Image (cartoon, rainbow, N blue to C red):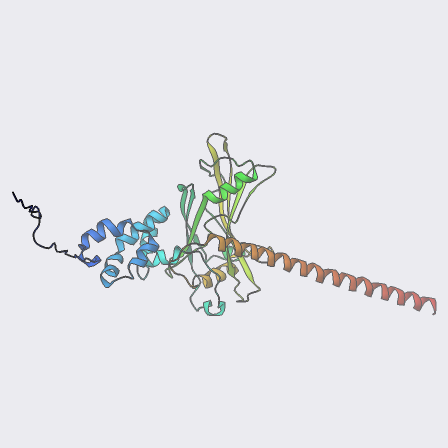
Length: 347
């Protein structure tokens, strides 16, 4: 008996069709973009996002977004007076962040920075210090610059009163390795603001350029620095805008206390500059090129080391010059003495 086999019918007799669904950022509702996506971005990422499309530029330029970013980056900006100053910037907190976030760079063409703007009548310092990403110090200080005392005295801004201290969880570094770790875990932001001119700049190297322990008191000195061009506009006239954080005291278990947070301007001869000269340098530095870009702590430390090398070279040249002048003076004196002796002898 003949039998025939019939294969089972396929589950789908028709040919399957693949449907391609295309989507873009424009398909996302603006409220979702603004409330759930853009609010999760940091400042540099948000600035890059604003360059993508016209719609994103509009959403990413909202003042509330940049206000929250400034507050999260620098808690000191939550001061009511400072929030008012920031709002007066050309584009509000977005302009303030653009001016304050990057490391300050040496102006490549210092002559162009000597603008005709009046020197600031008031400087506002907003300082935030972090240890292991935890805020340990945040303060705002206003400095009047029009008095004769300010202009003639050495320029110095102190964030703490002499008897005031701030407790921290920073352990006492005992070894060189401990100080090296402290330099990696310690960050500082010092934003200097010209309230009338609506200008700002960050004078900190973000991380310390040096951490040293005093051999007698045991205090730890963490130095942050920016290298600026002197008011003469000469590449050979650099100055150091140095920030010193002194920590000490406290207890071994509770950590050290921040005892000093100060800013001074030092020239290449190692002399601290007065208020008038320092204000002129800071005034021109406000006009330096700035933009939202990544911090380069290594570059800041490299500039500081180059400044120290130039400072040492300048000191050595001065010593050689003084030594040469001393030799010439001694030689000249010996010749005069010998001439007088010969004159008396053969008189």
